[in-house]
Image (cartoon, rainbow, N blue to C red; front, side, top):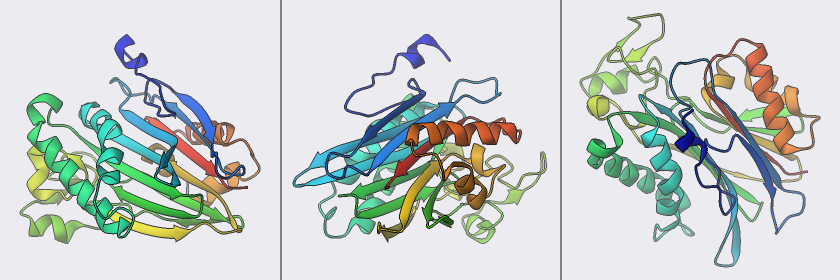
Length: 281
């Protein structure tokens, strides 16, 4: 990682790939804590993951803002998302009254901005999984791509996001004039290039790619133990339940995030990995 990447600002509890670990807690609910950890993989390029992990006061509410942006073909789009996406979501006029539509609209408008700025940001792209925790009571998850959000309730894993894979979205891709091919290699790719069917950016493939997020709203109740947000470097080698089981007895969220990454590496994951844990009890 270049020196300039290491020197990313770390303020207001917002963390980037320049900070590879950190933690914090809610001021409203003493039982809600969060921690994250990031690890550069064995690729020959710079770290392409960016993380947001913070609590923020807005009006009379406390918002937990958590996100992982997994860049590809360069990290500029992921870095842009880290700086801008939550601001755009929170500025939507119907954020409080219709948060699902607000998130979808913000994803679309942010993608349009990224495409307009392709000369500056390059032709790369990024997947995203975002989670907004409202007063430690309601969680709203949005995602494009294959980073994933998983909830643990009473020891049982429940996936909250949708993996957007070329194989499962083949009809949609073909309806846009694209194709899905396993060549080169053995992974299904859009137009033989991208291993995800939805993403921000990727101007050269945008006609065949969607940036429309899946959005899910869940209630945080007494049975909810923790949430995992992680890039696909974990999910390539571990099931949802394996990930939950690996950290269910680790009370410190930051330690849990680090341990989960170490478990994925021990299973031969070679990708960049970022992981956020939000604990509720």
